[in-house]
Length: 243
Image 1 (cartoon, rainbow, N blue to C red):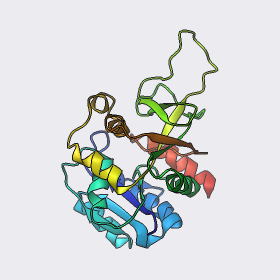
Image 2: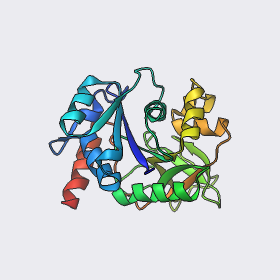
Image 3: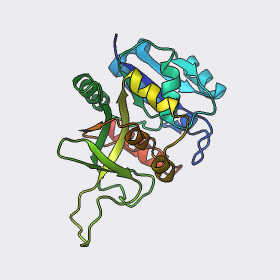
Image 4: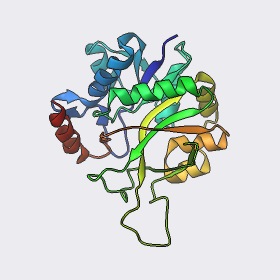
């Protein structure tokens, strides 16, 4: 069974309502993400998981498949887990619907790492680039150990230091995840956010409570996640450079 990509896309984002349908250079963002994912797994193994008829209609009109999910899903990973119940596959890749500049090669790296480490949750990370502000709370920062396993992820500036240094290299999460069905079912069956997950509002932290190790894979990501309206221009600027 080939790996499957599921793009979680909800209409009612608290920070940016209707975000998946915002147009990036004239094309809806969720479709731009789907266009990238199609290059990796093809249309047959690509699904958009959504609770919105507006989003499903847009996806369907563009020729992509969708799965309707509950409006009560706590996170994007819960939405992916719910959709995965209807799909047969050994590997499920969660590509966030707000990553319209993601590199398809980065998705391939996540798939290959998941094949190599089937009992780890896989997640991407990269250095915080010059055009990004590491203190931005919309940018989750990661700390990994010598095995490239996640130690912690935070909206705060981590790792911290007693000394003030301008040379500290910070690393950010790149929201491409690799799961198997067992991991998704465990995550979904909790039915509530863990304490730290609730404080940070970072869903991958729930796996710490489930005692599931998270392998971080370094990506050469020059992508911009669209968290706020102002990020649209950043994403469009990056896309124009690629054309």
